[in-house]
Image (cartoon, rainbow over all chains, first blue to last red; front, side, top):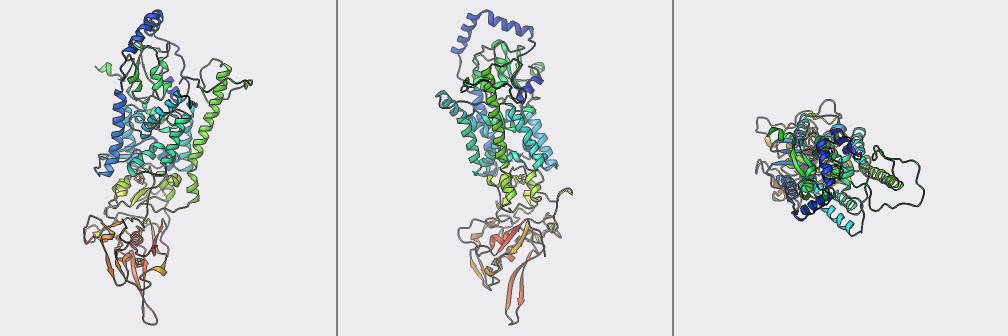
Amino acid sequence: MSASERLRVMFGAAPLKPERITPEAQQVHRLKRMSKADFAALKQHARDHQLVNHKWRNRRWAVLILVNLLFTFSFWLDIQMLEGSLTASRFVGFHLIDLNSALQVMLAHRHVIVNLFIGTATVFVLWVALGGRSFCSWVCPYHLVAEWFEWLHLRLVAKRLVSDHEFHRGARSIFWLTFALLAVLSGYTVFETISPTGILSRALIYGPSLALGWVLLLLLFEVLYSRRAWCRYVCPIGLTYGMVGAISPLRVEYRLEHCFHEGDCRKVCMVPHVLDVVIKGRAADLKTPIGPDCTRCGLCVDVCPSGALVFDIKGLDRLL
Amino acid sequence: MSGKTGEERPAATPQPPAEAGLPAAAGGRPKAPVRRQSSRRRFLRSAFLVGGVLGLAMLGYVPVAGARRTRLRPPGALEENDFLSSCIKCGQCVQVCPVAAIRLDDIDSGFGIGVPLIDARAQACDFSCDAVQCILACPTGSLTYRKPASLATRPGMPLARAPLLKAKEKDAEPTLNLAERMGIARLARPDSCLAVLGKGFRGQARGADFRGRLRYVERDRWRPVAVRDHPYERDLCNLCVTECPIGDAITMQVRVAADGSRQHRPQVLEQCVGCGVCEMICPVDPAAIVIAARQPWAI
Ligand code: SF4
Ligand code: SF4
Ligand code: SF4
Ligand code: SF4
């Protein structure tokens, strides 16, 4: 997948089949076809020896909970480590400002002061380094709650009590544009009114609020009607960080040779369109970086029985 | 995404001829009727989603347009519209206030969700921080010592001179770095004012359950004390005048009537910044003196 193709997919287009496949990749595709029985045996072997592994999930949950608790305790215990909330904060004196909130404020207010600019730049650099949408799965409190409720949704689907309704992923790009436009036209940060990220972050730090009712409604919608709907089809924060993610060196990488194409990774992924490359015959190269919409949650890395998906830093192999 | 969803079933009715899809629906191949039907449904669903979420977000206009409540904003706040648009809703102002006067608004305030406000009657800003820390903490300039020239200022909002902080009277720099008022105090219920009635006051100003705090300089320059732990004894009530943290903001006006009797009445002066200490401390309920939030000085 080319970089522009990966961006297209992030903004909502359906992934296309690759036009050119490198000879090496063709060779692997062919090998997998030729020895069908052997391949099936190998696959079975990998399955049998699969370790149920939650390494990355546990690390991620720990980090996410820790970051949010650091906010809370900085205020409660007055230890002044991380003051503020997820929309804007100060980490031992350094301004940190959420990119999407900063964008909304700049568009609505049209006046940028130095601290706002510094905080935005710091966060930009931080997330370019750490990998764009990792904000979503490693920091955003709504992500974690939605992840837990997703489990409930999947149970209900398995019992055939509800079914998943998909939306067009392009809706998220439309939301992003509309919220930006609304900020300019109305002069209010309209998105912030309904952002569950901001609402939850503030509730964790400053105490519960009526707005939690809205978050609950969102979760209910996701459980009963559409899996992970907010993050998949609505949240402009995710898309903003996705754009940053397009230039981050840290990402998940797909290694064709190790893959048995059982597709477990696509079942656990919150943004499965980025994993289209694992479909049999799709990979254009031996190694493919997963697209910018990937939240670097590591669920696919955990679930893959054969290590075909790994965390990777772009250009690191050249350095080593 | 696996493309098809479980619940889509082929329909018996003939298919609509053209497909109205969002930009870049799936790849080039012509679609089977079932696929076309399901992607048409998906399009409609998506349109509902977009409409629904945006509609809910726009509900934020209701409280704003209705202007149901005029909130008292923290010191140095920009004019209301600028304030709502520039505040990033982080609560850093909340965190630095030593008397916890600032809290964040809820979703019933629409676009004002997460924006700071002060409920003066419950806990006023008494400048215990000495340097208006909330302004210092604000990362967006929503709270600011001096507004940039491009932003709106109403006449009567700027203070004639820098406010004198009584608590810092002996310091080299006793003034507060505050250029505009938050509002203005008004004797809204003169009929219930103890001073006007010629009455004194004894005991806890707001009762034994009141949780508000105030900095009493004579006790501790830095640590605010619960109002209930600081009982008063006055022959004539003048709490609003004595507890006001700002110099030249309020005085007790004395008038000698024709029959020679003396009449008293608290009088708010132009240096009042609208912090709300007078409203918080006033022992009658509801308070005789209240803050007109965000209102300018007018003679
Ligand atoms: S998409 Fe939005 S709500 Fe979902 S995890 Fe990312 S920031 Fe949070
Ligand atoms: S510190 Fe500034 S931006 Fe943050 S909540 Fe307070 S007024 Fe708003
Ligand atoms: S008169 Fe009241 S509002 Fe005005 S400065 Fe004094 S205490 Fe504050
Ligand atoms: S504190 Fe209240 S009752 Fe006492 S003089 Fe002031 S306004 Fe009147």
